[in-house]
Image 1 (cartoon, one colour):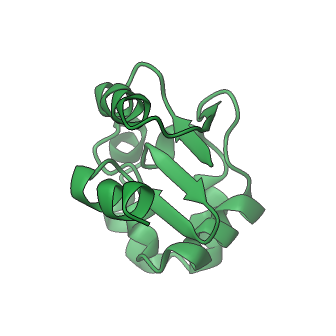
Image 2 (cartoon, helix red, strand yellow; image 1 turned 180 degrees about the vertical axis):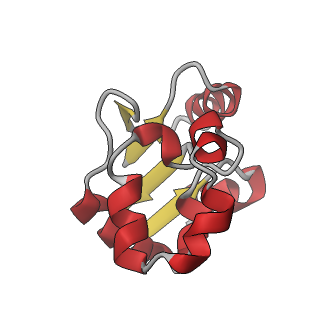
Image 3 (cartoon, helix red, strand yellow; image 1 turned 135 degrees about the vertical axis):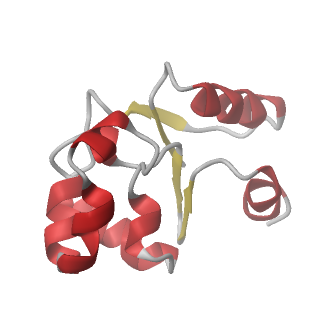
Length: 118
């Protein structure tokens, strides 16, 4: 299982603590140092069943500076995926990639259902 995070992010820290408390083994990947590639993002988006907008860190400074709130609607999925692959700080985190499941953001109930109960 892959845990993609930004170590300084408080939500990522909370998620990591939750994984450790539940004895869930994972490989950690720093999203800013090792940005997800276009191919990875395309695969994860396809596996997740989520709207592509959920993969964007909408509360991040870069998202706001680039005024993406107004631009995303006019961009194709391919353009959005390519944009996400340019900078890890645009990607919502933490991200869990496990078998055929992709979790975006830390929602304890969802993580519990997919990572503990399955």
